[in-house]
Image 1 (cartoon, helix red, strand yellow):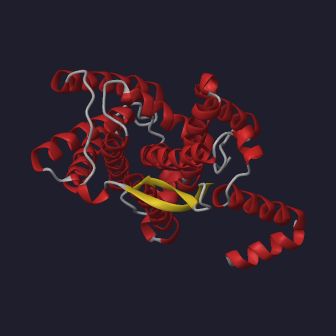
Image 2 (cartoon, rainbow, N blue to C red):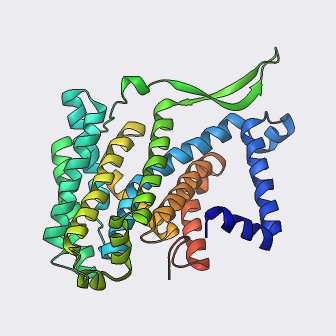
Image 3 (cartoon, rainbow, N blue to C red):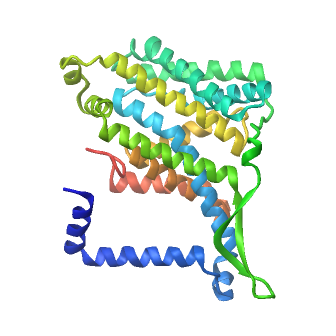
Length: 342
């Protein structure tokens, strides 16, 4: 059944849901495109602050997606609990910073971080996870140890300061978006300007998410990955080279994490402790979205990113708790995650 036919059938069965969806879409369009009346701003604050927080939440969610989708695939396919995933993020960011500092190229730093972390991920899979297959507790302890050792090495090399990966010159500046924020005294509508590099990151993450979804759901390689998620033993019995598939998926997931490190170093900064922060964010995103699901990782990342940014604006005292409230609510209602399977 095609997607259009599915939508038509759902609309006939649940017309009130379709009506509710249309009302929500119209409300969102008004929130972003129209100028808020003074009474509305008196209650909810300035529109510019709200829209900026939503856009920041989307870009932060795209960064979390880059980190978490690799983690989700690795755990969903191989049941490997890699608690050194945050270390790969920070290490990739440092590698990208060093390459950009030497060459001046942001794109080359992205490539170097991807390749270096992909190789590191492949080595982890061969030397650690293959030997500890099915031993989750030992995997946890081993990857915690690896993460701590690598973190100390990074501290020794780069010290405890903050590093910023410079955005390329062609991405600097702001872009005017069609979101009206106010009307000046002459009656001219003022539109929101937003960082161009953040919009690039958001668009690239969307493109990557669509590409990964097509890869997993529309290609032979994706069919093998999904089969490995369901039953890796049966997949091996068909003659598929499961170990090579495992190495490739682990390397690709680690490479994406390296790219995320460079992107995070561009949008924010690199410093000791960022590895633990992004490991925790990845765990929350995967728990909320569901193991092994790219769509779930995207939904979870957006929810967490929006919750953090909107929480920091409207409930700064409790901003940290908002993310965990979402996680607890999902676990209580749907323990396998929003897009996870039982």
